[in-house]
Every structure is written in C-alpha cells, then in structure tokens.
Amino acid sequence: MPITSRSNDSKGYAGDSGGRHNVKLVPRPGSLLGTSLAAEPMKLPADFALEGAEGSPGKVTFRHASHVDPRKPACVVCHPRVFRILEAGKTSDGERVQHGQMENGRQCGLCHGKSAFGLDRCDACHGG
Image (tube, rainbow, N blue to C red; front, side, top):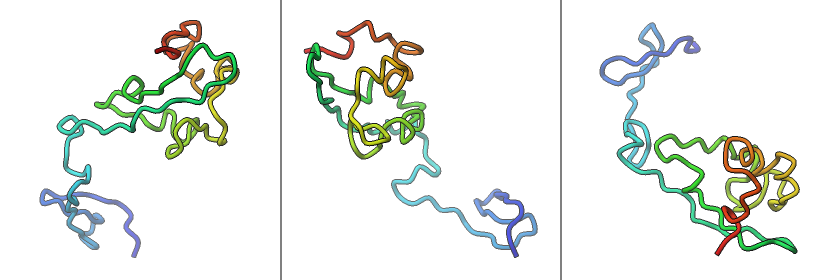
C-alpha cells in the first residue's frame, strides 16, 4: 500500500497517518540531518583562475567566498543552470566564461551589472 501522507512522531519515526511503514530516522555521521549549518561553517570550493582572453586587463580569480553566504548557501542560483559544478570556470554548456556573454546579461552578467557591482569596475575582478 502506498504512503499517502507522511508524519513524524515525537520519537523520530516517520510513516503514513495509519501507523504503517514506520521507519526511525537516524542521522548518519557527517550528514546535515539533525545538525545546524550555523554550527559548522560550509566548506567552499577552492579559488580558481579563469582563463584570460587576448586583451584582458589582468588575471581573474574566482572566489566562492565572495559570492556565497555560508549561513544561507544558494548554490542552485548558479549551479548547474549557469555554471558546471565539477568543472571550475566552465559554463553549463561547457564553454569558458566570456566577457561578451557577461555584457549580454549571461554567465556572470546575470548578477553583475544588476544585483552586484557592474562590469565597469574592471579592478573588482581583474587584478593583482
């Protein structure tokens, strides 16, 4: 019989409203179930350098720390819709990040120039 409605009782058991199929939910070590994200800071991926194009004013190093609030991570804003998760600096279609795409409101330009600093602040990304 399929479970039609789920509930948790006071002892941590989950099941249908008729008491059938009850299973005790026990968090695995290292899982987020039963833990607070505020207690353990989120481990962000390492910084990485983006491939520069001809005429670039300088190297760009992408830092997740300047893009993510570890208390409220919202990885799905960028991943996997805009950028690949396991391939640093690659867009969802496998291409490299391109300034022309940003200028047209794609890739980094989805936020930069709108809700984040604009593309006219070259030194904010391109720098020593």
